[in-house]
Image 1 (tube, rainbow, N blue to C red):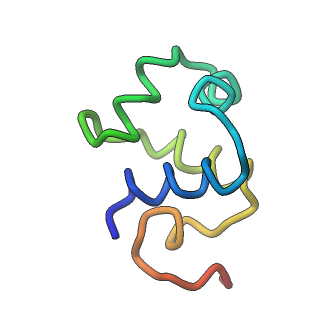
Image 2: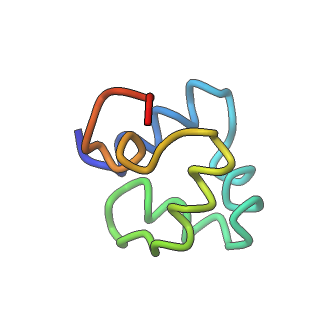
Length: 70
């Protein structure tokens, strides 16, 4: 699974909107939407913030592993 799909699935599983996640990351909705659609590559600093926000390891968020254990 690629990371745009993974970050969308995680967000939806937690019943969050794209706007809520964009607000947490300090960006506009449109920018975050482009990350989830795969139009733009997400910056490392935003991936780190998502890891902290969701309490998940980067390998899981990036789709490298399907295990949420570090």
